[in-house]
Image 1 (tube, rainbow, N blue to C red):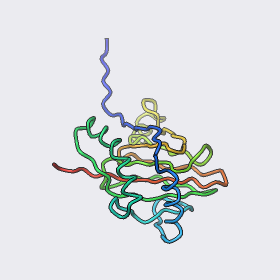
Image 2: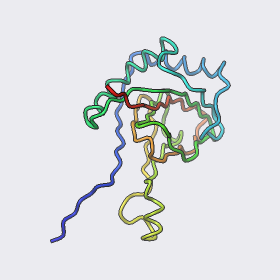
Image 3: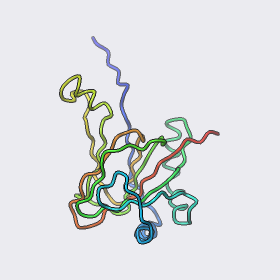
Length: 188
């Protein structure tokens, strides 16, 4: 009999998180796009806001307070205290996408879909050992190389910040709107 241990798995946590101030948050995202020139990071087309911090205004402060209980659940599991460091808004229209990337200097990252539906581009998480597995075994026979999550309004995803991820092309004429964020460890 051979024993088996699995040591190198990567969690992705998700839930449907109904936010009481959802309409206010949607309006905030659209307003922000009107005056923020944004950033060009992983986005190909579309718009990504400049960084937003939890103490920047009332709307983001309320949203941060809404997210914190979900982080507290992780805090209990992983035995460290995480708080949100920064946010940014993504608005991706037809034909836009996001290249494969990670989030350096963060521990857990997340995305909340403010407005999203099928065919607007799944988020794809790539196994960090994918290329090693291909080198050793040809195809990745032990671990799925890519996991897909379909965007849905009010879906919240949390994942290790080092996990490579991308977003597939939005195939609709409707904007996909999300708020992404990074966390940092707080030493008590």
